[in-house]
Image 1: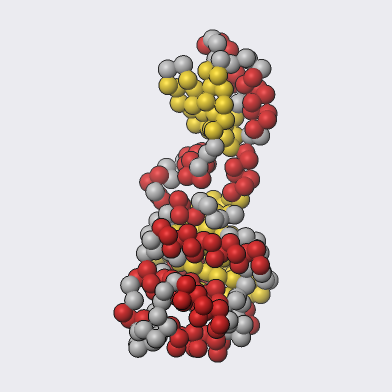
Image 2: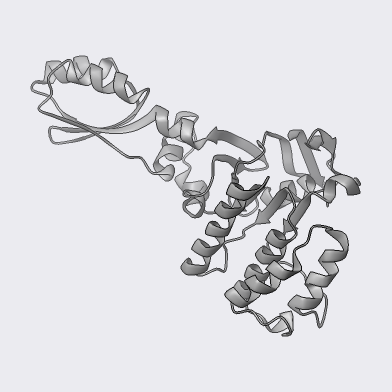
Length: 298
C-alpha cells in the first residue's frame, strides 16, 4: 500500500522511506510514540497530504486527489473537527451527501445505544463523546477502509470494548479493513491481525501477529544437571534467557513441538510453555535488532 514513502516538513523528515502492506479484511495496527510519524503517514494514506517521495496505492490506485478512491475511505483524526454549531444529526446529513452508502437509520440507532443526543451541539461533547461519534460516523459510512488515529484515546474501558466489538462485527459481515494508529501496543493486542512499529519516521518492523505467536514462545524449565542444561540450551534458538535459581526462563524462537522435543530429550525435571503477550513478543523481536522497545511505546 505504501512504498518508500517520504514526507518532509522544512528540513525534517516526518516520514522517511516507509513501506507497509495492508491486506484487505485484516485489522492493521500502526504503533509508535508521539512524533514517530503515525499521523503524517495516515494522512498520506487517506489522501490528505501528498507524499514528497514514494507512492501510496489503495486497491492498486493512487489515493491523492482521487475522489473515486477516497469514496472508499473514512478517516478519523486524533482531534476530529466539527463545524461550529454542528449536531450529530447535521454532521450525518453532511457525510451522507458524500458517502452514498451512509446508513442513516443505523446511525440513529447507534446514537441511542451510545446515549448521544442527535440534536445536541457537538462543541459541548467531551473528548470521549466526540471519539464515539466519529467512530459511529465512520462505521455508518460503510466504506471499505477506516483509518483511525488514536481511536481509543479518551474512551473509557467499556467504550473501548464496545468499539472493538463493533469492528469485529463489521469484519464478519462485510468487506472492511480498519487501520488503527496508537501509541499504546496494549490497546491493540486483542484486535489486530498485523502490527507495524513506526519509529523516528521509519518502520522498524511489520509482523503478522498469528505468525509471530506461532514462532516465539516462553519456556520455563529445570534440568537434572548443569551439563544437560548446557547441551539442551545449545539446541535452542534463544532470544532472551534468565536464570532464577535452577529455573531457566527462556524466550525461544521456533515451532512449539520442535522446541519441546529438544528439551524433553534431556528428561528435564520440569518444562512448560507459557503464552506470550504481544508486548513480550515485540520486546523480544526488537531487542534482536538493537532496540529497547520498552522505551519507545510502553
